[in-house]
Image (cartoon, helix red, strand yellow):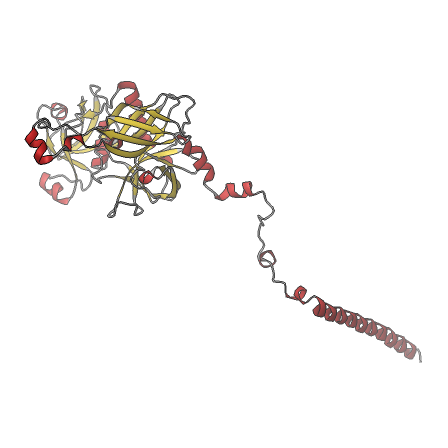
Length: 394
């Protein structure tokens, strides 16, 4: 008899909850109906990206702060003022028959032609007005005019050239010059982002971007000493002598050449590393020219055929196939068939490395060269001579 009142009270409580639920649903449906009738667009809002994937929204950030993380504009702003345009002119040679009236009758006044002009780029590397550019930009020029990005112009004089690396040092006399910072090109890695800055086709200063495609390119037949940075940043005629910079705006190389079948950029450009350019710059400013060591040998990359011919057990390295009589190498006892393994403790792995190492030797200062022969290894003391830029032997 005591159970019935409890069941009765429970059913009453359940009815109350059910009634409350029904009223709530009724109100919500009524609200939905009103919204669907008066503001249907409220019911068709697309979900935001943040509601699907958690992201950091940059819309609220200061644009200058957002751009700084993705744009290369800061690097371009730092480096561009120090990149200059170079215009050269050369007077045509006068014919020895210029005063002969019969010559003039048949050939006309060809000797009165306009001066030959050329365009290129350069990089200001010192507040004293020193400019790095390519030797082929200013070679045989009678007049060199430099134009800065701020509009100033000045005549430049050649301090010195180094045809074997295709570098030249100019100087202008202007105040408050913008100067580029020299970077560490030895720290570059394939894939690093770089900018090429110059004056292609004479259209005006232009900035292009790309990556480092390869390092240590050599045996291209461009220069005697080759250790190029390869990049896919667009380099075109007129860019020669311009700057290759990293994302910090630091100079990494001097743009020099391109591989092209059309004359324009095909995504394969070459720049001389800053490490080489710095060495040439210091030597020219200090001595007026670059002095390099010389041994008087004809080296070749060792292969199976040469190894068999000379009877060496090594299968790789640099083998000497010829020695100049009365040269430094001959005086030291180096002979054909020797495989050079080290110079002053520095390993020699290929002909390009041998050439660079020998060139870095100081003429007249003895150096130790380790060679491998049939009867074992020997260390020879050689006194390098001074390299003749026109000579072919190392």
